[in-house]
Amino acid sequence: MDDKHILVAGGGIGGLAAALACSRAGWSVQLVERVGAFAEVGAGIQMGPNVVRVLHGWGLEQALRQVAAFPDVLRVRAAASGHALGQLRLGARALSRYGAPYATIHRADIHQVLLAAVQRQGGVDLQTGQRLDSFVDTGNVVQAKTADGLQMEGQALIGADGLWSTVRQQLLQDAAPRVTGHLAYRALIAQANLPAALRSQEVTVWLGPRLHVVQYPVRAGEYLNVVAIVEGAVDGDVQDWDHATHPRGLLSSMGNTCTPLQDLVNAIANWRLWALCDRPPMAGAHEQAQGRVALLGDAAHPMRPYMAQGAGMAMEDAARLQQMLGGPERPMVERLRQYADARWQRNARVQARSIRNGEIFHATGMVRWGRDLAMRLLGERLLDVPWLYRG
Image (cartoon, rainbow, N blue to C red; front, side):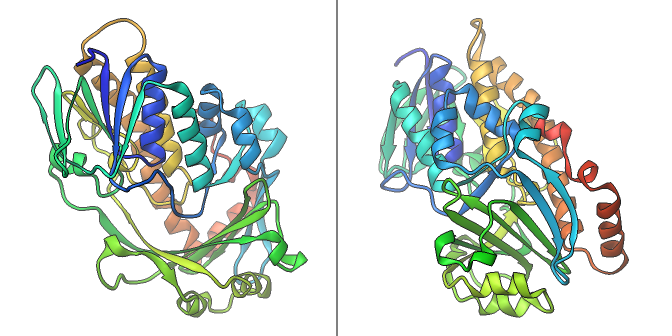
């Protein structure tokens, strides 16, 4: 076995970021992905300057520029009236203040950017159709096998296998992810297929009682990504909740929202539905690494989407992992312990803030009134997040 060999479970955004980071640090990588081809489903994601800066550091600025959109402003509006509540300047302000722009991108596009970077980097063995089944940390190496019997061995195992992580379950033996009671309707539509009044190159967040809607451009601005999150019960197996759906459930939840928002929802025929799950904020470094096994992204810290940082924290994890795997020679257990020590508190803070933001976004009564007043008075100071965007 190569004495600088890392195993990675999962071929999504987090797994590919981990593979790229390990390879850039001088390690060979064997990555296993359970599906038969590398692909990413879903719709868009937002990437703050903290995340874009990581991608630029990996030499992906030009690749990102070809497929992402870079909105100049984020606007918050009341879903009921359509009135503006506040705005955050992005664009040149984000670049000047944080050293990188704010980007919006389709998940499949950032996945493809990372996959192409991994393939160019070299030193990564990508294996599809292989689901990691079990592993043993012997103290000297990690031995792992897949459900199809593929045997692997490496100096470490990085579990980047998502919300329902097999690596996490064996490492921490904790409970299943918790169901949040929030349902996400997601859609993607070509801007050319929308009435001119509904097209947008901005990020817009519509806040209403027990719901909110986010829209932003992706695919270099040619498409509009729309996510509507409402409160509701899960019917059936939560792991199967990624499917096409009729918008009638969404429309019934919209209530007395304003005409422009209802027009946007009605203009979109095809929606997919997700039941949102998360875990409590991390309680310590032991939840991110033990021995020669480490967790990354949703496997370690799944979070609600109310700070738009789920994928971002996975890429930050990978960047820190690269730092720990590079540099002077030292024991792997020490490298992974330092990785976990450096990451868990920031991840926990984003998890906790995401939960709180969801409560604020969906507020009713006096809390909603106070939120709207504070946003009108404080505006950009309330919406900016320097501790997050500075990295």
